[in-house]
Amino acid sequence: MSHERMLRRADLRVAEGAAKVTDTFRLHYHLMPPAHWMNDPNGLVYFQGYYHVFYQHHPYGPQWGPMHWGHARTKDFITWEHLPMALAPSEDYDAGGCFSGSAVEKDGVLHLFYTGVREEGGKLIQVQCLATSRDGIRFRKDHRNPLITNFPPEGSVDFRDPKVWQHGGKWYMALGSGNDGRGKVLLYRSNDLSQWDYMGVAAKSDGTQGTIWECPDLFPLGDKHVLLVSPMGTEPRRVLYAVGEMDYEVGKFQAETWGELDKGPDFYAPQTFFGTDRRIMLAWMQSWEGEIPSQKHNWAGALTLPRELMLDSARRLQIRPLPELKRLRADLAFASDLVLQGETRILPSCSLQERGLEAVLRVDLAGTSAAQFGIAFGEGIRVGVAKGDWRVYLDTTRASRGHRGRYSCKLSSGQEKLEIRIFLDRSSIELFGAGEAACLTARVYPSSPELVPQVFARGGVLKASLELWSLSKRG
Ligand code: FRU
Image (tube, rainbow, N blue to C red; front, side, top):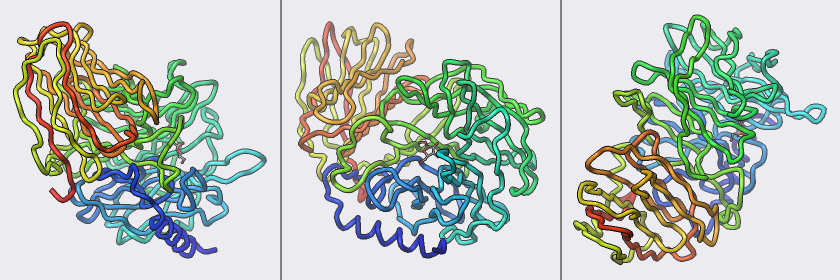
């Protein structure tokens, strides 16, 4: 069947599926598929006035299956427009699926790079492919595909997820791979986006950072370069970043510091792009492990809120939700200064049925002696700060569905005020604290959308101010 027909057939199945998607756990302000399965964000790019987001999509059911590329675009990251399917597995070289990849514009043409997969002798053969478009909507696969057919000796059959970018008049492609138990980033270079020359291993695991590196991303940030990788073979899964220096002549990235990008259980395969004037990141907001309750309702997977990446003066990675997401704020449901001592304050109830919720907690640290303080959104979702060790945690150990655990990240200490922003949607929570990559992302599935938030302080006084905003796309 032609690519064109496969795309139309897939679109039809998503439309049919969408009619059967029930509202339980549907998100209000995150990008999710109209129906069926989604995983990694792909091909993030600003093209002809829109931010385009593609994603790994199985249009035929709420489980992972032969991968297509779903497609949506936005002008403001508030309102999303779903577009026709961009890629379907239609050729011998991608008969098993169109895996993750990236996008760049050259001479007014949008170029999508992806990994074509096919089964052969029990193995999943992975080759690198190109599809192009002038209107950013209909894509044609390149007749020279596959552009890269074999993995180099330093790699293995796991050889995927091309991330392409331009530097100094040349094009570079980072590919995820690994061998000998070490995840690797393999680097290629091109003058014309079609003929690619292998340069070597740009970065590799130190032996503890996973066996295969998926979805590598390598980009300039400030006066440094940053590498992101999603490793397989670590327990638990961790998404890593490194800040360092890139030598484009020899094709080597020298990591100076390593860290974890998000300490929550539902954050994977992040990808960044340069959206006109800043570095923006989205990630898959779900995980390969554990139960996905929305599958019973005919859909699975969503993307995180778009986040901006920056380096502070000490070259530490800072991550914040895009400032324009404040436009989601519809009503201020609660705003007050609080002084609490060994007590719990019950806040006005809110419903996640129609709208999301943002909580902004600003703590006056000089006036706060409490050893622990935070906000609980019902028993299954507790956010707290342990003052002694300067960690903010998300505790879902009592959740009835989804991941149960206590996840935490380090806050930067030694400041006078501490701000924590928490975004709740019908089935997700994202937390942003002050400090190096201080983010926690999780899918949560409250059995009732009616929440009664509570602020608590233990072992001393909490002096803070709190705002609760209801969030709506219409706001
Ligand atoms: C990461 C990943 C990628 C691959 C895609 C397949 O989540 O495993 O390496 O391209 O998902 O859907």
